[in-house]
Image (cartoon, rainbow, N blue to C red):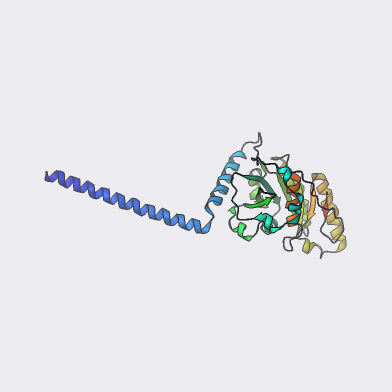
Length: 288
């Protein structure tokens, strides 16, 4: 009897010790969870992470393109005036990309150090940039806004411009609704690269809306007039070859940044809102 009691006591102590370890482990998990909550908006972060992994899987299959789910509501009720006005009341960064959103993927390609990330941050805002999903050579940011009661969610995939980032091109371009090819208006070599980026993108997506964007317009206007004219003519020729709309922009002065995404929205939903063509040297070019 004494041996049996001792055995029960021994096993009881082991059970208590196991419970203590479980409680200690739970506290660690809770503490780690609280730290993550302070760093990331949890739902948005894990949704972005899952989407990145899922798109990486889909990027391995060059066959049928997967399409984003659309709202059941009638999008023809969207007013072009809401898109053109840019009223802050019609946009928000606080929405989560829930099931009632029209989710659209936007890809951005171009050489390194041409202002791609600054361009995206200017559009989505600093707060959203802090919640972005970043990995080596790829940055994913979201912009959610309301148009006539419909929630539109742009998922913007910014691919790094160095050679090591080329493996992200299939993931970024697969199933994208629009592809933005960018170059630095003050660097001819980055302009010469746009056709190569375009060809890379078209390997994985034949239907996305192509847009050619020249960045750093505020620096470009300081160049000699003859150099400006040469760059404008070359950029227009490349845009025509790509069948793309051409925009000159500046993230520093917010020139044509919002207008480009309004243009994309109007094109995707066949809205009557259009931009005005501008071929005046010394002004931000818009050509189509």
